[in-house]
Image 1 (cartoon, rainbow, N blue to C red):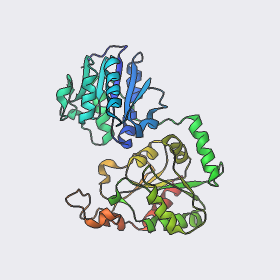
Image 2: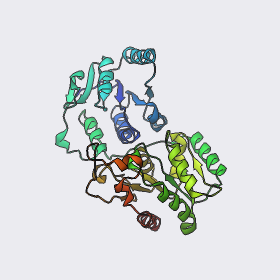
Image 3: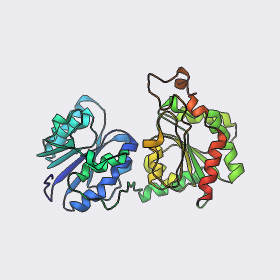
Image 4: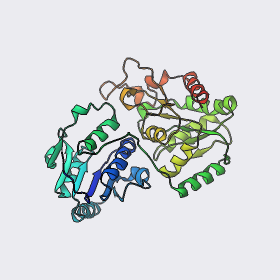
Length: 344
């Protein structure tokens, strides 16, 4: 058992994507409950900052940005000067392991079988806990330092200011307070995992007519052209579209009747904050990466070449016309919408 001082300065390193950070939030409250006098600092990358910035069990959030050489020197110098008692690497990549080492914390914790485990002086192994899903691996490492979990519950907190801003954005798009709407998060970082634009466009037209719900299109940074392609296909004067920060997007998503999206960070975030998610899976099998909500619906056809990788992926996939998404029909999504609305 790792002996951690009761008033320890603890640094929790969790880089990578939004989905990984969303599930990492499950360990904050148990850590703080077990070490109530500890000072907990969480280190994330810029895209994930808003997911943890309002969490009540975090004392400080550090944000790593891939910026200038001198900017990074300044950041690493801060890690050294902070004098953490405990550094926990939950990233397992090279950068996270180096950050853990450069804290020079007396206790540097990481997974025993991580490729860069030589940067840790406390190497933990948790195969006996039989982790199956991404969230299980995050929880398992913290359990191994003696932290009990009465329940496992990721949590994203939304500020009052973000909630107010979300209401303004909705009102600007003709969605007044109390009105029912759904979110179609059409963007994806992986073009080869894109559901065809014309299907999204048809969905945007059908939902208001069939379910009397307003549709709000959203996407992440760098995905604007994908939504613009859908808007051009809708060919209507008024298409509601919002791109905003994660805090406001969380508030908008939380108030929706349901969301339609690809597998990705937004899907995990939406599920954790309690939205009903209809997730379109293609290149990745949902067995491991499916959303965790009980009312979430996964649409996955499991064709022969799915799941895939770079060596098995076809040329047309990179043009946004992957077969694993082509076989998902409008009717499949409408059936999922019926299922979600009928479960309310």
